[in-house]
Length: 186
Image (cartoon, rainbow, N blue to C red; front, side, top):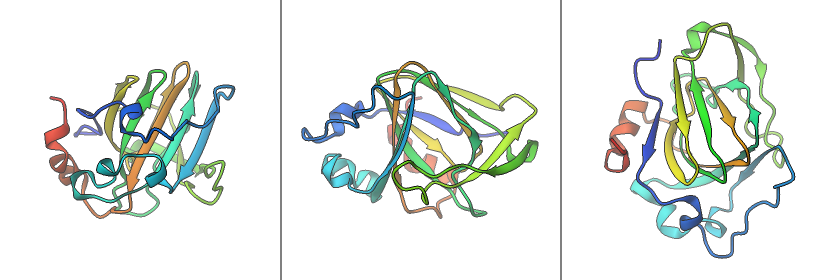
């Protein structure tokens, strides 16, 4: 059983308000799902958000899930690695489910992102029990997410998620939560 929360709603502007005026999205309204990895954040996001909390936000995973359920997986492929991100949700709502890894069965790896197939390969799991925690993720909101804990994202109609990440993976989750305290909506 997971004892601590794995996702927190943040008091940050919607994604459309943190992007540069030149960013036009990914032209994928016709797709049910999409998974891209981007490193050109300085061409997408306003500079003040690229150093939020003194961290260097280096890349973004973009996930579109329109009436689509992802696989249970962990973004961490190493022990003691904390992959955390700010997920900005737009265009539709979704949810995220989390499991304790001890109750799951490993079942291979996830595929990489569509544009960088070698990036984003992570442990995949199957579950015979319901998730320990489930969180609603509403459009036009930002969330702090522990992507190291096995999880599964579900997107309802037209849900898009912009998952901004740092390469700093040596901060334990409890310290990440403390770092974000001023932004967490309580």
